[in-house]
Amino acid sequence: MIQALLLVLGVLLLAGCGLFVAAEFALVTVDRSSVERAAQRGDRAARGTLTALRTLSTQLSGAQLGITLTNLGIGYLAQPAIAELLDGPAATLGASEKLADTLSVALALVIATALTMVFGELVPKNLALARPLGTAKATQRFQRGFTRATHPVIRFLNGAANLLLGRFGITPREELASARSAQELFSLVGRSAEHGALARETATLVQRSLLFGDRTAQDVMTPRVRMRSISADEPISAVIALTRRTGHSRFPVLGEDSDDVVGLVHIKHAVAVPEEARTITPVRSVMAPAVTVPSGMPLEPLLEQLRAGGLQMAIVVDEFGGTDGLVTAEDLIEEIVGDVVDEHDRVSPRAVRHRDGSWALSGLLRPEEAEELTGVPVPTDDAYQTLGGLMAAALGRIPAAGDMVETAGVRYTVERMDGRRVDRVRLEPPTDGHSRRDRADHSDRADHSDRADHSDRADQADRADRGSETTGPGHTERGRGGARPADGPRPDGGGGRPGSADPADPAGQTGQTGYQEQGRPGDCDGDGLTEGDTVVDPRRALPPAHPPRGHSRRNHTATAEGRR
Image (cartoon, rainbow, N blue to C red):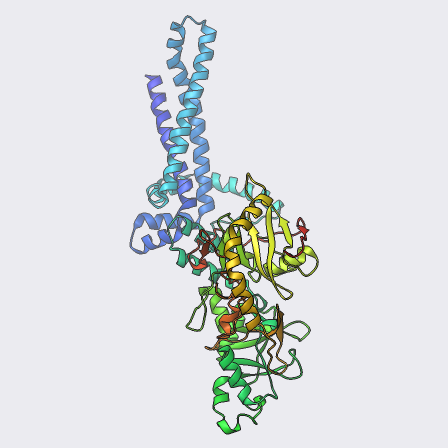
């Protein structure tokens, strides 16, 4: 009779242990916003759960006290009862009394521990993790009642623990923080997209918005060497001619040199001048004041400044007061929504994956953008902002076609230069089996025939389109075959950002419609595309589960193999 009573008490204690464990895990994992919504609908159990969440530390202490007491009770009552039940079977095996007692105690300990782990710990824990809201509502009354009954003991134990933490400079908290940092939200959105809870496009939009505040004007600007500009002393007719040639509608107006931006001119002001006066009216007579911003200005206040002033463009200056580039409202918007393509743009792939697993990337891609597109960790450093900058920083000089940099098992090869700028980079992820040299040779053989078909047309395009052309003292960029004007604002008021063009123009500079002839800083042209290559659309790529990471470049190894 006593044995049966002890076993019944053991079962009750086991159930109590399970309730405490379920309550503990449910309170920790339940979504507070879900509880608040249920409470607003009049759910009394949800209201009780919300009350428990407001004193979470105390409730968890109560649950832990309950788990400890029930486990002690199970060990004190159930284990001896089970051992006594096993004495008879052990004796029938012919074992001595001492050996039978030892075996029964050992078996009783194993059985009691297994029952406690399965029914008192694992089952309630997994239930709470699977259905936290329902479990929290079901256990909150029992949990709160026990905590209230044992409050003096809990208060004493909590006070002792908090006093110890205070000695280490840690301030205890009564409840979990409901607010989340941008990094936590970024990771949460990425995991939600991975598990299908959020659409890829929605997750990408949210993640871009979270990263927006970390960007600066220098991150998104069109560099000075890519700007299309015009001299203040040039006639109005030159603005109209430049607009026809480039498709741009706004241009920086220069004084003595490219560091002396004295204003901005819009094509609508130029065409408002009578036709007979356009050749004698200087640009300075119709230009508007130029707004300047520092290169380190965060994008959020920059966007607010442009919106408040009804502006579409600002000139970015460095710490020495020199022109660093230009930034437009469209550049800022594209940091959130991605590339905005209109009828003036050529659609160019930002990344191309070859059959051998390597990637063709624009040298103007930021490392974090390349990592997002390829899934391969790309090192970042304050010394550079682009893949081309990574190559130059690792080599310690201006790269040349064929130069290679290897870090963390990833090889970066300069495939093509545009003057002194890295135009295209080949990224080779680490692979097992064949060596990189074998894989590179295989890639060269696979691409050779198709590249040969493009070579004549590319050379013709280079000779035809990369001639010397400049308007006034506007800054130009040297490419293969001469100087060419750099990029500038878009026809709709946006600013052109650098990049490259389509497969028919591997140099990316046909000079047809201005902004799109440069593309965007991250476009990779279609030169050398072969059957089996994959063009990656970043707008369809699965968002990363974690924010872009920073990597040290101290372990870079660089080799120069000369020009191919």
